[in-house]
Image 1 (tube, protein in one colour):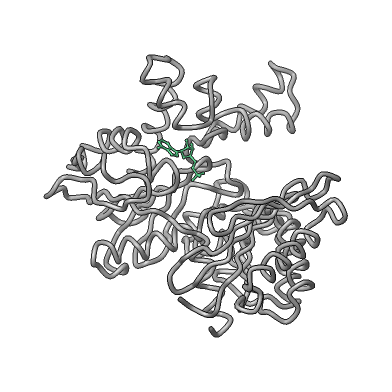
Image 2: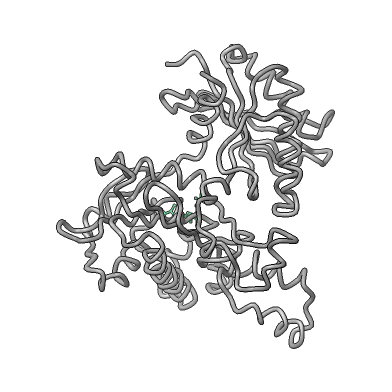
Length: 398
Ligand code: AMP
């Protein structure tokens, strides 16, 4: 066990997720979730040694109050002095950051500059960063950007076919997301398969409530399905993914909806939820589909079909496909979705090993394609927090 622990923080506008990790073993010693951080009934829940308890934050219902409560909790458990550095998840680093960085005033200004690209997230991250700097004094702070891994995408992958002036003026281009997960999973896949990641052409599907896919070759991202925002690409829990942009004018003219309402519909009421008219949760949908619910069956089919089409197109970006990797809550657990996707990709010679597919669930990694399959399908659990901890330790010189 390491003496130096890393605190990983992921701040939303009214929430703060935190974890204290042993960077060597990946063990999580404490985790917390602060919520309602702008309201009088703000609270933070701590989980340590398998037990949970909640602390009221009504005297300071903000991010500083949450970080102070976390500091007290760490002191109470004798962990405060073992924290060596703090890593912060940051949604957008735009074109400014292609890797993680130690935070100083210039980096804070850089994260501020990227607010137009992540108007809901970056301001919240800055609240968390400032609170951590204030409460933890001289500890190093590191920013780990969701977009950084995708900065290697070539121009022809990240440019939209719209007037280029919009890119020059506003930075309107594709940036991608889930980059920290892709970086972790690409490394783990190479390790698991006993290969050098530079020799592997991988298509990695990160399938959680938000879902995306990336093409990785030479150890670098070549393309990804999310774009300017996380709305583009695959069908997701509540997001539509790719859609004809004329849907905006169609709904404005026919359903009398404004831009805010349509954006909300595509982000929060669409995807698995919109199609199934049941739930955004893949587990619930699978259960209902098994009982014959038509909407649930259609939602699963569309999810898998669109994903398979994306696997094929991402293989163009990676110059072929040696490994198809599934990760995220759905990717790591739904053998049904994986089986459907592999079925659609049969034309590649990809053949499922049904037994192995059934076994690779609940945190178990595994190869799920049959022996001799020209494309190796594999399940690799992601761990974004550990990736953030690794970067934080490295950049802090630990
Ligand atoms: P994440 O956002 O990565 O936590 O993933 C959440 C998604 O994973 C939700 O749609 C869950 O329904 C899905 N999920 C988790 N466990 C299972 C499971 N055993 N079978 C199918 N989907 C699952």
